[in-house]
Amino acid sequence: QVQLVESGGGLVQPGGSLRLSCAASGSIVSLNVMGWYRQAPGKQRELVANIISGGSINYADSVKGRFTISRDNAKNTVYLQMNSLKPEDTAVYYCNLRFVLVRQYDYWGQGTQVTVSS
Image (cartoon, rainbow, N blue to C red; front, side, top):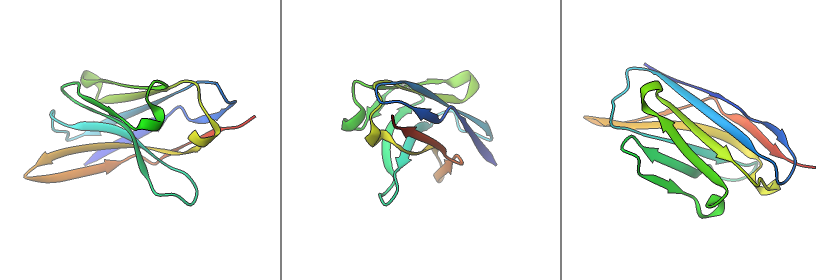
């Protein structure tokens, strides 16, 4: 089994910064995608950013230039540095790990609340 443990959420003022971390453990295929999704109240879950184990990165347009995703493959850990936070970034942020081994596997963290408010 695979487990994802997130940390780093909280309350921050507009313009502030937060760093999220997500550590994966268990039986993990080395070629994988780790990423962050978020879900605001009344909205669908959306991709924030993801990073393939080889280094390719995707960002949602709404966070480009403000958020930076990175990973440590040796630790199976993914990070999300969030700068210049806006109230509209308020959401529950979920870590995701995806890989293919005969079929696609998707694993999710428990979610961490990020609130941007003055």
